[in-house]
Image (cartoon, rainbow, N blue to C red; front, side, top):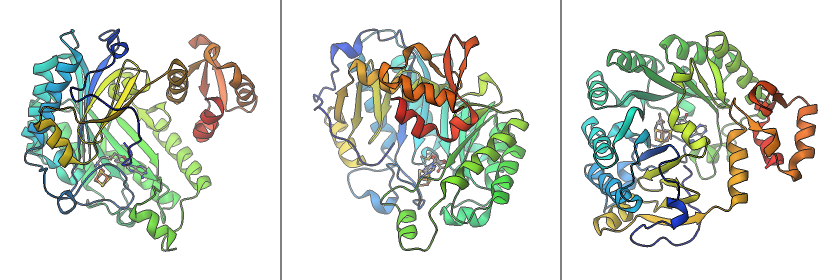
Amino acid sequence: MPSVLPDGDPIPASGELPSSALDGLGSRPFGFYIHVPFCLTRCGYCDFNTYTAAELGPGASQRDYASTAIEEVRLARRVLGDAELPVETVFFGGGTPTLLPPEDLVRILHAVDEEFGLAPGAEVTTEANPESVTQRSLEVLREGGFTRMSFGMQSAREHVLTVLDRRHTPGRAGAAVQEARKAGFDHVNLDLIYSTPGETDEDWRASLDAALAAGPDHVSAYSLIVEDGTRLAARIRRGELPMPDDDVAADRYLIAEEMLTSAGFRWYEVSNWAVSDEARCRHNLLYWTGGDWWGVGPGAHSHVGGTRWWNVKHPAPYAHRLAAGESPGYAREVLTEDDQAVERLMLELRLVTGFPLADVRPSARTACAKALADGLLEVESFKRGRVVLTLRGRLLADALIRDLA
Ligand SMILES: C[S@@+](CC[C@H](N)C(=O)[O-])C[C@H]1O[C@@H](n2cnc3c(N)ncnc32)[C@H](O)[C@@H]1O
Ligand code: SF4
């Protein structure tokens, strides 16, 4: 979630949605995203909507956050009406959700269950910084209904973690995976970042080796993005660090694909690999396949039936609006059919299941034919004529998708 919010149409104080959004509610999978906007310190590369204690200012506190978030869950029930709407997935992201006491996270989850009901076998994930969990906190989360942990490991090399301003030691992420397994989590993800300034191929291989040795069933690997306004961007501008290089990033992606595949992982989205279908992140798949979700928290985005909205960004006005019984929504847009078609292509083409060839827009057919001829796309006929990225296509996915959208 980027920290700068776009403009859009105003949202009524009640949060009421246009009737088009409520049509077909319950026929699409439904999930909750719960944003927790707090971090102990800010990593130099990170542009997410998150605040350290020193940055937060008056009007919002970590201590009251669970109660405030629960107010928004109740608002969601009022806005969405009484329809049967079992929650398939809940994802707590940040920020650092595990900076809150685990009992607070469980309380928010139970409010979702009370208001909507969790579907049988619902996936409930929280992101966590490796240093922000303990054996006990993981046990409280597991017993409270969480089913999946996602740890931000980033690297196993100390000098890379230092450039990224990470607080944990290289070995902490692996230890956290072991603790999560002991607490009874079947599903554990590790997030990795590659092509950090100063990282070598050998460093990246060591990070992948360490991640695999920890035994997760899911790995996300992201190329370092230099976001405007971050400390990392300023250091690069001053010449203290080199800009990450696209060719180096492509080589690192190939190393990840090779090592993860050899270890039994398979890609299912350009930046995501899992050991089995059950290990895939169902919450992210819901985003990528046009599901409905309500995003709770400051700056959180929601999407229900073609209406997309986003909340006020700062935790203080967010808490203030909910305390006054009002929607914390900042602005919204109703997607046209055309917008939805473009969005569908942009998301589905990044998946291993690809995009139906027949649905490629007439204006993009030449670009699609060229991508097929250049070996960036292939037609999976056994998937009923869907175009799927080849390995080379995955390296160029962003540019290719721009051409086809
Ligand atoms: C919002 S963070 C939350 C997780 C948790 N706070 C942590 O840092 O461990 C989710 C993931 O996004 C990725 N990420 C954040 N900023 C990034 C950037 N500028 N470039 C690449 N990946 C980034 C990191 O891998 C991180 O683990
Ligand atoms: S801990 Fe995570 S969310 Fe917080 S600043 Fe670092 S990367 Fe961003």
